[in-house]
Length: 387
Image (cartoon, rainbow, N blue to C red):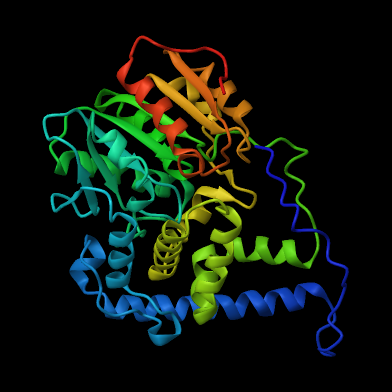
């Protein structure tokens, strides 16, 4: 993983002159993080009081109230409305067979295909894939735990228990839908957990597609040396305290939509205006609607290094696997190449042109072709990266 946060450069300031009682960066940092953590804990306590006991165990029903009130202009109803706008040209239905909210498309007689999105997104992010895939498969797209409007709580105390909770949520979903075997497509964090599921339950996975999976490489000693400075120390400290990008979007309240809009304008400059607006609305409401996404910090250390990287376990992935990366991906495809060469089964690795980490949105046609070719032509396995 070659991620280098270029924007997190060493601070030019060694103290804050406007606060004479604070003599060093660490004191400033501790006060900032403490304040954020108090606000975050307060919002979570309110949410726990609003949420009924049954929904704390397993609920995908939309909440009518938002724990942070008018400060954050969202709730589950708005998430669903934004989802419907984004999926306005997609034919789908909702499944009530599982506590993990599931969108379903395609002929029930077709083989099942499960789409697992990345961190901080939702089931509708596959809106450019569902129509193409549903011509050949019975497509299931899920809202990840604590994402979208899926609200079950699990054991997220340690990296091991967090990984196990996420893997078991897929297994429970499979049992709830009475599916024997299925193909599995996972992106980013969803890719890491999909691979972990294939390790634990290989008998249930027909084929595996890992789209720019996070958490593959191990950290080298050189890469363990993190940047210093006030900004990076704040990021690291906040990470340790469980702060996530979702918390930032929620805590800045009415400025949250503006922040997300700036991101979508920068990230998808060529996207048609109506589609970009629908994507922006859905992205904001998905980010802001849930107060607890801290399991991300249990899976990854700062810099998106996995506490339990996939590379040392790659030989345990015994399911035919397609590794997909964007040509301009910040995830290092060489780590995926090293991992797939350890697998004892036929594998493939391809680089999607004109695409970065969100390769399924950057170049959906090329992404869809690669996935369908792999899933439908089971005897084709290129052995070298292709673009």
